[in-house]
Length: 280
Image (cartoon, rainbow, N blue to C red; front, side, top):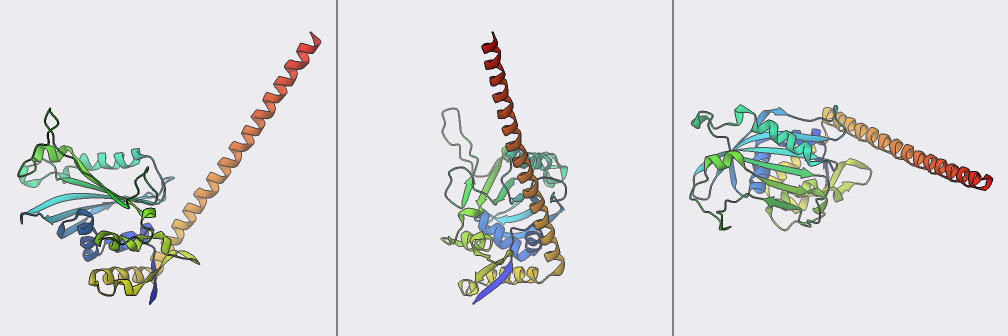
């Protein structure tokens, strides 16, 4: 049976979805490829839809993950989601804020070392020539000869100064469901937009019927679609982006007009030079 759910690429919907602890643990576990046994959304979120030319939603999570050896590890997850292609400086500036935040230091070390950090980027555009929907950039440690240095436990000093990254290219999803992560991310697949309303996705509920976690996510997105406040905020986002498109169209038109005027002036200058040469 086909069902209609709110599009989580919208900031308002994504925030509503991730405020559900069960969903946050499900998505972050799949991204990290580890079991997240506890997660807390930090009190700060950073949507800049009303202040900036680019929509970028940012939120922090403190997550307790279960390691392969059975130990538990507290990490910081910096999640950034953007609709449009933007320069990397914006992402770096946000990470710099988190590196400078004293709340992100390990309490047991009395502020000497920072929590291990993982940066997650949910992008509404593609990155370079990467064809995989999800790519991982992980740091490793090497000696002078280029040999990888292995340690039983990560060094807190090194972990304080480095971070891993997970990059999700939403346009690359397009119906791909080859693993657990891609199945969860399928609710972001923009190829399933309802033709009459880009705020809604049209999903086949039967594909998720045997998965309790996915069923929970779908119900949450259906709830978002029925929420008047969220729908109003989605409308506001659409108006914002329409204003951006109108502005960009105006700028492009003005640039083309200026180029035509510049070309006409150059032609006039050339004609005047020819006339001067003829008079001489």
